[in-house]
Image (cartoon, rainbow, N blue to C red; front, side):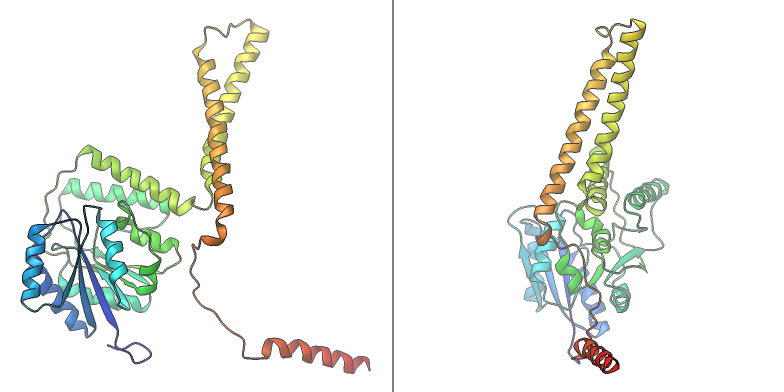
Length: 338
């Protein structure tokens, strides 16, 4: 297919291969057939998150069969976010897709994600109808409800690894840790248009995984990270200051009450542990407030180097119009005075 200039557009398919990996040969043939049906030229980039002999052997076999694929192997395990960033760095296409290394959606649905980029900058898959038991549905709904409360953005399937984005969107993403789950949230924060697309879930996407308590803790910490990145990155004083001032006022109020009781009602202070707790709250509140102020100073110092916006459109005046109009007005005024 062609873009507006008549040039053939290219799709870069980035597939991170991490701890969960399916039959890469079967998966690749399905993806390739689906992308060929769209009419775009394409390139496949497999990123191995650390040495993985079995996956490497499967990809080597595909290359021996004549499949045009590139393989990037990271020196050790870094996580899916880092693997995606490594793939984005090597991608050259006008459209960049991320696809999982296991059966998650029907390959035919790839065309829907690419088509959605006509009126958006990032399209993410929303598996519907979604398989899973009652507990799985409750867990997913709770996670997305927390994300909505924190970010004020309503997404339904942040765990889906099928995404399509324009190259400009890809270049602005900064991923680390487990932030790959929140790519739509981060893109929306940058001002990109994000759209969810309902796609059919693959019948082979039936991974029975028991989540341990520490994994729930990590997800909650990830949500807390997103809260800070989305709402307080450029305003740390609002975050630390709100908590700090609240704690300081609470501690100061408790101390004041106890001092009044000591002065007018003869209540001893030496036997009141609440005095120690109130003093600790007041001091901690001041420390949090100071952290917020230091954060504001750091951001102010580096404000010129930080770019967290996107320009949607620039409209130029016709050449000479902006300068000619004032000159004409001045000329008209001089004529009227004369």
